[in-house]
Length: 237
Ligand code: HPA
Image 1 (tube, rainbow, N blue to C red):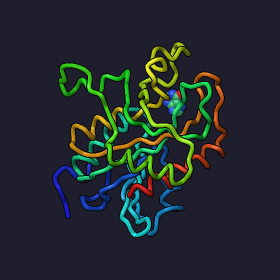
Image 2: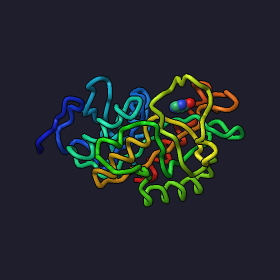
Image 3: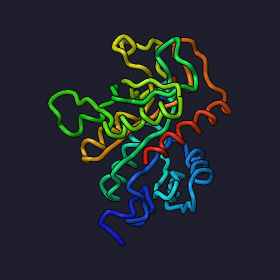
């Protein structure tokens, strides 16, 4: 099977090699870990720029996992191509975030109902205002049901997708006052691309650090938190 535009300069996959649902993480090492530890018969379809992608099965269901790198420009490229060139229907991002709440537990989950941003990414479409980037409700509802079933510690709400990791000011600005739960760097780009493409998306995040107290997870604690998110995402298939 082949289709115009595939493979792309960023993705070596042939059309048809990628499943309708793709689980994405920023870090290629995490993606390899998911493929090797959770999927049956994973086949590598991409390694351009190290943004590895594998297709395999989970409990008999076809699924792909792929790396998206850091920040909106990076996730923007990969998800655009997956939605528009590879006809992917659903993308679930599993990542980390910095909580805006002093009492947030490290390792707990934030399921991103919506995403605010300081990025200009949405301006490209010439929208005469501000687009509210939201998760697909069917995926969101299923994630909440599954989080309940698994007894996970989670919150559902708005996140802030920032273009800057090393801000000049440690001040969190007005975001926490507006009820925004946490900061990360990709959800808005993912949700925006899903909206423009008429597709479905959800971001599930582990609280890896606390922007108020400065606490952060160790590398091994991050890995454990990742396993909870991976199981949650795979159970949405
Ligand atoms: N800022 C931005 N992105 C993040 C953070 C943060 O503090 N923690 C995890 N992802």
